[in-house]
Image 1 (cartoon, rainbow, N blue to C red):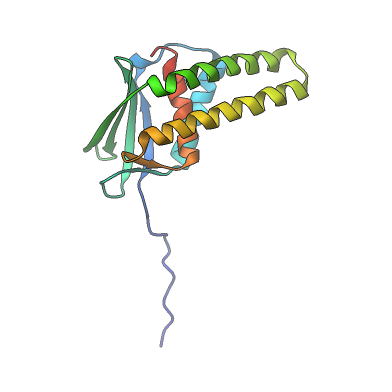
Image 2: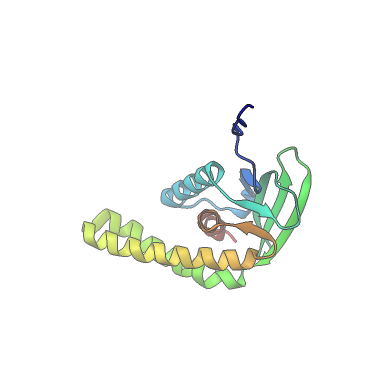
Length: 167
C-alpha cells in the first residue's frame, strides 16, 4: 500500500490581492517620505495579504483605490479584469485619525532630521499606535464587505493616508 503524497501546493483558503492601483486623480504630489511609504505599502501588500470580498469565491484580485466626492472607493476586479464589486465608504469615520496620523508623521519626519534616537523612538511608537488605531477603524468599515487581516488593514490604511493628501 502506498503512502499518500503531500499536496505540493497549499490549498488557497481565501482571496489575495495581486495588484493595487491608486487613482492618480485622487493623489496629489506629496513629500518624498509619504511617496516612499506608499510604494513600500503597495509592495508589501502585494507580497503578503488577506483580501476576500464577502460572498465571492477565492481569487486573485486587483484593487483600484480612489477618493471620489469625499468618499473612499474600493473597486475590485479579478486579475483577468472581471468586475467583482465596488464598495463606497464615507471618509468621515477616518477623517480625524488621518489628521492625527498626518500630524504625528510630520513630527516623526522632522525628528528624524533633528532629534535624538530616543526621541525618534518615542514619536515612532506614537505613530505606530495611531496607525494601528486607523487600521482597526478601516477593518471595522470593511466588515461584512471585505475580509482582511490586521497586516493587510495596516497597509491599506497607509494607502488611504496617501490618498488623503488630495482627498
